[in-house]
Structures are given as C-alpha cells and as structure tokens.
Amino acid sequence: MLTKRLFIYLLLASSLLCNGWIWFISPNPPRLDKVVLKYPIGDQEVIYGIRTDGGGATGGFSYRYYLRNGGSSNDDEILSSLVNASPFLITKDPKIRIESRGAELKLWLAGRIDRFHSQVIVRRSSDDYHVMNTSLTSISGELGSMQ
Image 1 (cartoon, rainbow, N blue to C red):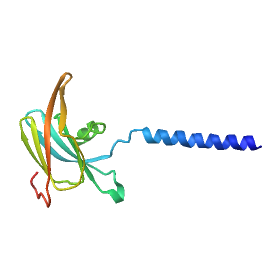
Image 2: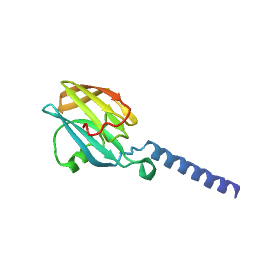
Image 3: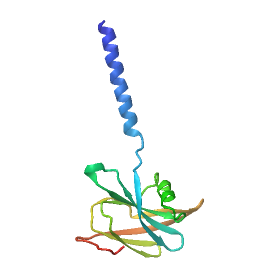
Image 4: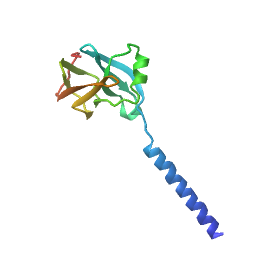
C-alpha cells in the first residue's frame, strides 16, 4: 500500500516537472498587434515599428522595431513575417525619431528601453547581407511628432 502511494506521488511529481520544463523552454512568440511605423531606409530596407499587446492589463503595450528588407505593404503580411524575427529595439515608447545616413541609423526616444542592439544585419538575398550600425539616444521629456 505504501509503495503504491509513493509510486503515484513520484509519478505526479515527475509529470509536473516534465510539463514545467516543456513550458519553460518552449518559445513564446509575442502577439504582434499593429504596424505603427514604416520608415524606408534607402531603396531596400524598411524599419517597421510593431505594437505588441503581450503585457495584458497590467503591462500595457510595448513597441518592437525591426529592420527588414522591404517586401510587402500589407500590414497583415508584415505582422506574420515578423512573428519569429528578432527586433533590434524593444521599448515602451511609441514615439521614436529616426535619422538615416548611409549604413548608420540614429534613434532618439524618451521612454523605457527594454532591449537594444547596436548592429543590425539585414538579409537582402540568399547570400547577400547588409550591416547597419545604430546609435540610440535616450532623452528626457516628450519627442512630440518627430517620427
């Protein structure tokens, strides 16, 4: 009787651990909600600003910025193509100022910065990649409508 009960408890514990581990390591892509910015860089690249609603009622919106080879102008296609892509900037601020000079991007924003990468690699074709260097300046106050 005691052996049977111990076996059931061990089985339950191992099941909980296994399910917890699977949940922990499984990818959880963000819910991309709306395209809020399309900023062309030169002839081929576009910066897409995407609003995500992953915070729920307590977290609010966050904004993810991607640099991609411009393809579609349809918002639904853009959102579906970026689900598994990695953004170079994640912030809580919907207002961002962008300036492009050749292979360099300058960004200004006033909100919280969650993630930022200073170099972004853009795939132009199957074997052609382009590197953009980005600099970010966090300012105090509001940017207004300087997008």
